[in-house]
Length: 234
Image 1 (tube, rainbow, N blue to C red):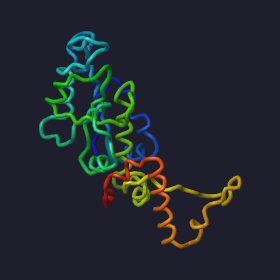
Image 2 (spheres, rainbow, N blue to C red):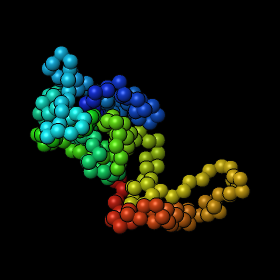
Image 3 (cartoon, helix red, strand yellow):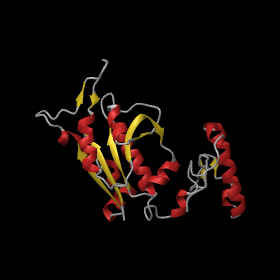
Image 4 (cartoon, rainbow, N blue to C red):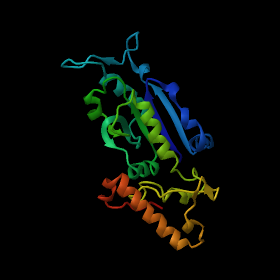
């Protein structure tokens, strides 16, 4: 069974976008995963297809209505649908490689892309939405965040990456940032490839790469070193 993604959005024309290209695009064409979009406005009941209203208690901006979103979610994810329901939100739990792997091992995801000031809290609770953040910054809407999540997941689906081992030493897979990479030419503007990488000694190369990964992580993301390493799923 292929990974099945359903995206609820006010801008379905934003999909597949980048997801229709490169690895994700080839996998989409091959049927390794599928992508469906639902226009949230189709579940509005007034002639203007209004999906938002002023925030209770006052304040700036508009809030997406619970009743309209509930109808959209119920249409996308009826009873018996085992896919997690995700809400792309800056206040959500940070997306991690471990969570990406969990999603890639499942049947798919239903992804709600928020807009305006946010989503009525009642629909988050009533439809058990898992809030997911892709970083400590604010986007215009959840669509770009949904692209990030789906790209991260799809590349881990079986057969998507040409070399399955290529994902095992990537940043965050073992709790470290990835080691530096080099290729031809042998000398670039007076900067040669490190001798160890052309030594042919695979054990020494592995030790060097691990040491470099630890060094980079200590310099750039020391917070990762405080976390227990996550085993790579096989």
